[in-house]
Each structure stands twice: as C-alpha cells, then as structure tokens.
Amino acid sequence: MKNLAVSRRYAKALILIGKEDGQADKYNTELEGVVDLFNSQESLEQALTNPLFNKNDRKNVLSAVLEKSDFSDIMKSFLVLLFDKGRIGFIRDIASFYKEFVDELNGVVKASIVSATELSSDAVDKIKEALSKKTGKNIVLDVEQDPSLIGGVVTKIGDLVLDGSVQTQLINLRETLKKGESV
Image 1 (cartoon, rainbow, N blue to C red):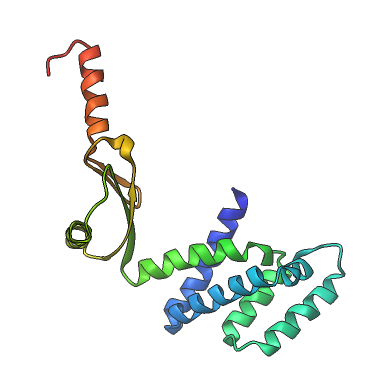
Image 2 (cartoon, rainbow, N blue to C red):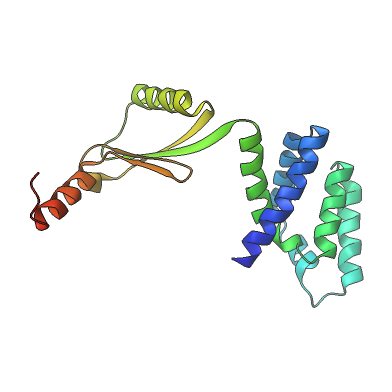
C-alpha cells in the first residue's frame, strides 16, 4: 500500500512538469516505453533493482541504457531520480498512475458496464454517448457480461456506481419484505 502512495506522488510530480511544459502525453509514451523495456528485458530490471549488485555498477547500467535511448532530458532525469531514491522498481505503478493523470488532463474518463446479456454495439454506443453528455468528458468504456445479474446493467464511473440490475432490485425487495415494510 505504501508503494502505491509513493508511486502516486512520483507520477503526480511528473504530471505537474508535463502540464507546465506541455509534454504530458510525450512523457506518458516514454513511461510506457520504459515499462515495455522492463517487461521485455527482465534481466535489465534485475540489474537495476537487485541490491546484491554494486549501486555504482547498477547506475552505470542505467546511464548506458539512457545514453542509447531517445528519451527526453526530463524523462532521463526522472529515471535517474527514481534510481537514486531506490524507486526504479516502482516504474509500473508510477506509469499506471501517470496514465490516469494524463487521461484526466485530456478529459478522458474510464467507465465500465456490466450487463446480464451481451449488449449490441449500437447499445454500447448510445450508453457511451449518454455518459459523455452527463460527465462532459470523453468516455473509454469497458464492457463485461455477468449472467448472475439476471437483467439490467451496472455502470461504474470512477467511484460512482449506478446499479440498475435486476439482481440488486430483488435483493432490495427481499430486505424490504424481511423488515415487514409495505412495498
């Protein structure tokens, strides 16, 4: 949990720089490139994060990699800072938080819809359009299917949950009946 808080702070610091110099999207692309590099070259990540290796040798490896990369000076400095602070191993979480910040900066909101049955592409488009109008932002929609809902849909936008499922309505009805209240 602490690692996520730390990662969020580093991502926040980088997004502030990105806002200031107008390069937020570029830094996002570069962070994705670093994550891809770590994913494809696990030995590189081990060489940079393993405390059994000499710290100066690890920093020389990072310097050599950065020298051959086409990353911006800000990104190179950011990666060196992460290394110096012992946070280079948090790069995936930092990149994830940074992506969220860039999306927010660009007016993009992630939403998910879970439905009991498969939704047609037309229905998905209409839902996406309605959510865009309500929020005033561009919506990136993740559509899932869950037959246990019986019917209806559950929509999540950030922390907001709009539950229109039959399953929830039945649970609420059962609770009301248990209490002996009139329906």
